[in-house]
Amino acid sequence: MPSVSFEFFPPKSLPASFRLWDCVNTLAPLDPAFVSVTYGAGGTTRQLTHEAVEAIHTTSGLRVAAHLTCVEASRAETLGIAESYAAAGVTDIVALRGDPPKGQGRFTPHPDGFESSVELIAALAETGRFNICVGAYPETHPDAADTAADIDFLKRKIDAGASAAITQFFFEADTFFRFRDACVKAGIDAPILPGILPVENWAGVQRFAARCGTAIPPIIAQAFENATRDGTTDLLATALATELCDDLVTGGVDHLHFYTLNRPDLTRDICHALGVTPRPALRDVA
Image (cartoon, rainbow, N blue to C red):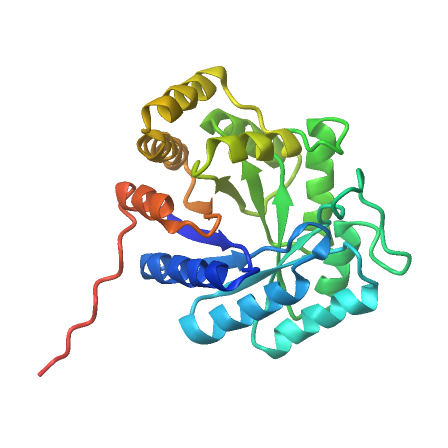
């Protein structure tokens, strides 16, 4: 049975806050190895992320990893945020370059900021206070020349001080296995955790895939078109994600990272199908 982890995003409204806490409460009994909280594009949820991370850390007892990016902040500001996490007892960081602010086509560093995620990782590692995880791309990142360039950049991030990587989502297990094998060949020995995105909203997933370079197999696209027409998308999403996870575990994967989009039901059902079930409650001894 694999270990699991879950990604949440910070709420921007009161109803969204209720959804986040419902998500945490639904998935916490599955005993995740950790949970992570994202940054919005352009660093737009920086304060909200900080508040969500501290609240989950304080109230749930879960190990929480905070996303930290290079966008729209100086080096001092970014490292100050990291230090505030450490002061609150949060020492797991997912270090990313980050998406550019809305309306900007490409990432442009802050005049006094980090030029890349490699610089951010090195600065965090130099403090000796953090366990650093990074992003990885089993299909070529839109800003990369090719897969070899992606793998070379991942190696630079690991060499700079990262201890693990989480991949972008993908639809076929072979996509991950090819990437994993190429990373090993390139000398990357850090754990690479596959990112799983249960399809809650097919139209939204197509937009995500287009932005990050994830290929959608035609047979899956057709299946979701049919399921959308028939009102059976949740059944299809659960079946496909469970099959994908089972193929990964059969191929030697021992940890799965789920992008929950703060909607826990599909993720919970997939975990249950894989044998990841709630911890048994401790019984009082008379």
